[in-house]
Length: 359
Figure 1 (tube, one colour):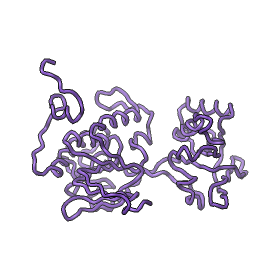
Figure 2 (tube, one colour):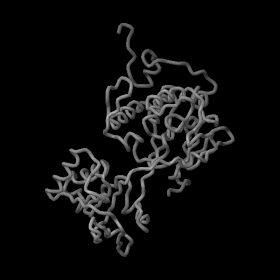
Figure 3 (spheres, helix red, strand yellow):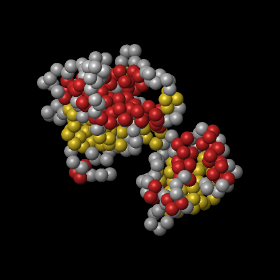
Figure 4 (cartoon, helix red, strand yellow):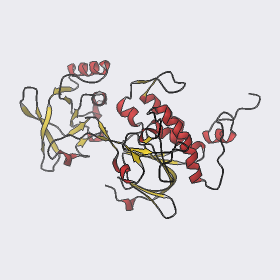
């Protein structure tokens, strides 16, 4: 873990915890009120549940958008927030949150990054997504070097015997991406390992995988990992695989990428002293403030009478939470409601031209 002493303290107007759709829209709403934001998420990319659970499935209940995929929605929200230049701190979670004597909040992440913020907005959905770990004795010692639970650095895979474990869309896509690399950038061998023949991925993706297997571009093996072998320097050299007939054999392997799904965990949020109900943060509906002044909660992480866990409801919560945040960040001024249709100031912030009266 990176030492917190080696990372400079970041002073911020607001810190948004969670980079899912609601967290991204929260950044946009804060920006309209001239509040800059830093965003923290446990995943190595933005998108939250949309990207992890249904990236290519259609969503039909986003206002004025007849249909879009989770991936498309996230891309548009990220683009919408871009004029406000949020800083994303990905692949890390907030492990500590406390109020300082001056009323600001001190936060520290699992990578040792420290923040001092005037307001905190929790948009953590159902919690931080953590990959389900492979249960093989001792294999955790290989994490980060030869065992990966997200896409591994491409340079680490060149010329290696690479195994991808899993049977869902993420695993199949990872194998296809590896097979599509140019010759000089490809692994020595690519093998998809799944516990059964059936893959939970779109038909076209499975067909492409099988065609590549027939062409000798990759392998597909049915079985499970029971152990592993190492070289003298403790690097991975092979995997013990038990097949459907119960036979175990050792196969060359230097890199293993595991896609066993994700498990949401509330994590340290439960230890921050905020009022909760059934693992959700209680908020008022005026500004979606929690029981701690200066900390707000939007999206699936919060609860209140009549709560509905819909993206569109989370978007509404972001608007009111932004105004509540403005009162914390700019206590000396009154925040007026402006319309993006007509406000020259908002047009300036968004980087768009103000229509002339003749128009």
